[in-house]
Length: 233
Ligand code: DX5
Ligand code: ZN
Image (cartoon, rainbow, N blue to C red):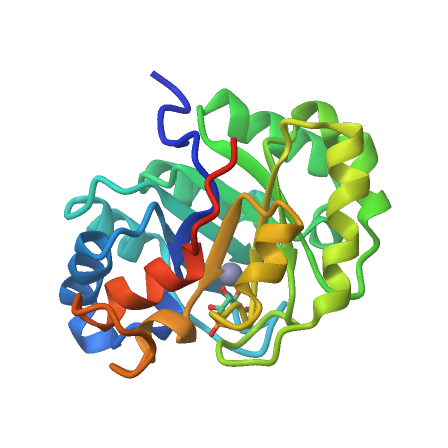
């Protein structure tokens, strides 16, 4: 059954595995799952579209065997049409790509939906939200990047949040994901702007034990603080 992965409460928290300890990835994944993560964000970088290289489809397939959480695959690659089927076959539940990289974004989104994968596009800080308008009929979500793509641990760019309301006005059920520099300090601003999914790498995996006062372990502590008390449908 498609699309049973989306809870009705917001915001969903998607730890970005880019910030996890790569040599203990399985343990890291299990730890954030136990700590209350709603989905897992997997950054795919090809060393061409962005100056970094990360996870390939074999990683997604391996992760899939060990988690029930939806895998949210963010393609930062020059040829998403070529690689998307690899990540579909590997078990991705959500896939986004950068529309500037694709000559036929509408067709790629149609393909993803035909495979029962949640279909999204990712907008760089310098990409206007209007690029999304013709794609809305086949779009499940928009990933709004709040840093330039390529690396974790960068500083949050708050101006990108102005893209949210115009998009929600055009399509109220559009899922909005924000990715990059999200932390406990700016999380309330995201909640105020009705963000549906918060991606957070450093804020979870590099969280210190002093982040909060809950005796729950630092990942759970960080996730609960990101989520705050916001529960809106
Ligand atoms: C950046 C990636 C992000 C990154 C977020 O290109 O798309 O998903 O992992 O990491 P933090 O939360 O550390 O900015
Ligand atoms: Zn990402």
